Length: 431
Image 1: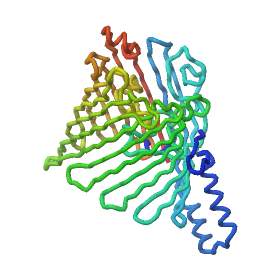
Image 2: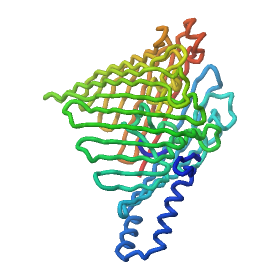
Image 3: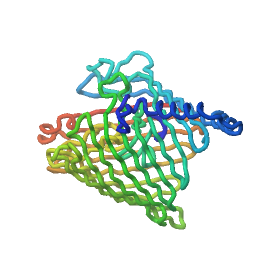
Image 4: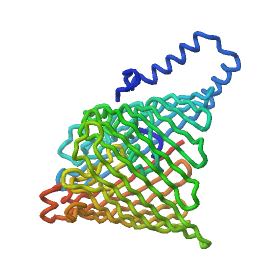
């Protein structure tokens, strides 16, 4: 689900607004078609491209309850509907369109961030309808794809979009007005580039936070030709034109893999490092590092791993991931959507059991300040899902964060010193 759904923006291609970029290109194609005769065979293949395209319908019904001592409790019942259509290729070209709608069912007893219920806890699933994807693509030689318009951009498997993602847990997904180029021409290698004009955030068109104007370049290369290691390198040059001081440059490398043995048990590992600094008009204080080290084991029925993740901080600036799917990291209670100035050390253990369509997941986190070494708190996350068939999944999910009330944490991070509990029940279906 996490590489599928989520404005207006500004394009730097001839100063054309991103919201009109696809229309302009599509219009040019139509005009060119009107100026010259189209052979009958080409007309037939165009009709086939239209009629043999893909149609996807996804629905997700969810109840979310938030017990937050700082606000009245939240009770949110929402339905997400996403309808996507993508043509088959015609002379290498194609079009992708997706409509997304989020509805609250019953009384809105939660703060959606736009409904004015500020006395209740936040559930950031505001009502609204929008075009989630609208892009023109071309697939050329050497397995190269160019895509222009509103689209999803991710470089890792869902939901673990550490730096660039769709925020797929929220009902309104994050999407990008962008131009992207992907090449698989080299053996075992995927090279990706994206220029982002605008970010369509999870808060929807009725929010003052609906869009982030950007002039951002993303570079990512992945290599899978080694027997026990998949390698990734990246450079994310994020220029936030709405908040120039938040602009950052992130350079990183990652290796992860497994060693199978004859008993069917695989050893797992991950090692990653990234350096973050200021970019363009970013503040000089934007300077931090990221580390991740993981060891674990996996078999057909289970996975277990221990992880140590650090987003460093110096008391002024903490390592930031503004375009990530943040819910997947540092606890499902979403206490660390913004890295605190003292940074975060997250020591966590994950256990997963799988059996006949059932998946049970448990994660325990211990959070500490990277600068100063004091405790933030701890969290227990639990999730159970049952996949009935290829079209239907049911699930329950729970997050319990207990803040540490030591004097330093209370003084520097009062929000992190408070407890919060969240519970979800959901049903998702896709065709």
